[in-house]
Image 1 (cartoon, rainbow, N blue to C red):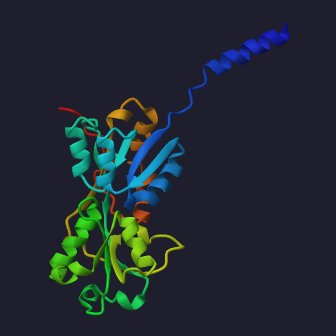
Image 2 (image 1 turned 60 degrees about the vertical axis):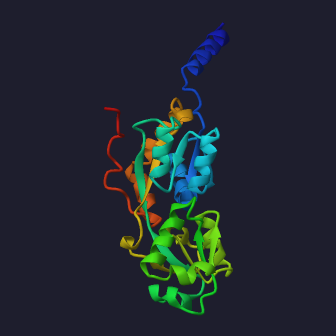
Image 3 (image 1 turned 90 degrees about the horizontal axis):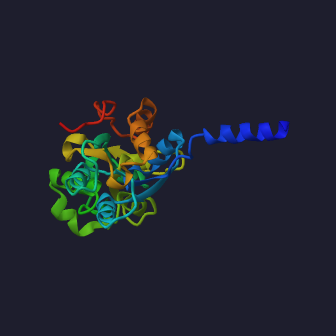
Length: 254
């Protein structure tokens, strides 16, 4: 009899336990891969990260890829997702402001922006500017310095900014213009020069809750955590500027 009562009590207790958290599938722009992993770990929720160029990820989303949240490297694609009913109106916000650097594994190659005028330069790596905002920002810098026409034949494009970084890291390119975040970490080897932000278009990176994730509690909680002081500290650690309004309440209709 006592065993039966205990079993009933145990069953009743288990019935009031919260259901296991849903997994949230997060599409993450390549430049933000490392901080996204750190934020996901700090969040301690069930998240699955898919990394790629912003344009490629948006194409996948438009074709029905099962993502719940989109962390883009620009503001245009999240806005377009909302306009095309792929994202939830009022859910988007800027989670980071990207910075770019001139990078080389050779210290002699990074002596200043004048390094881009070095006639011995054979190859310079950037991300594909058609799909990666960091690639478009790199083009801005070359045009601002009036060296784009000279360097255009020497440009090698990575499918995303991480691949562009790898080209320079292994010596396949002499220089690269890439996200500053990629040069953070104890295992990174190379030399960098932070490029002034006024030389390129602002790299405001927006997050948006996608239509597929509108009923996913984990996805919503992850976006809320992305605005927390703990997440913002990680953003800054990876050489992003944190938006002033990122900790404000989400935008709502009306």
